[in-house]
Length: 70
Image 1 (tube, rainbow, N blue to C red):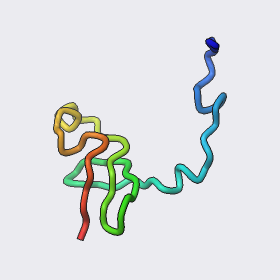
Image 2: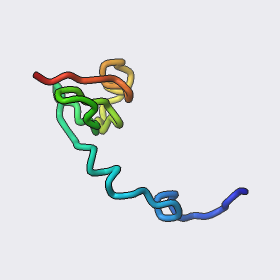
Image 3: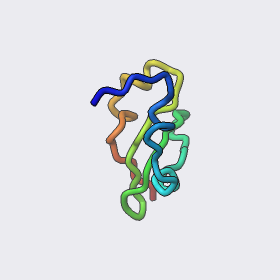
Image 4: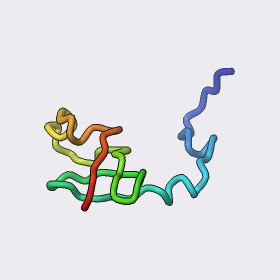
């Protein structure tokens, strides 16, 4: 089935609010990131919110990477 619409996907197929409660925005070395907690002190990067193109090219801030906090 193909659905042609101008409406955003989130309005047609809504995501449960519980999915967004697991995520938070943090600042790491001046880079804003959306992360999701995986372990007690470990977070996985979901999205890079930086406007600097160099941050998108860095593997350190790419989605899927794990950040550990002590």
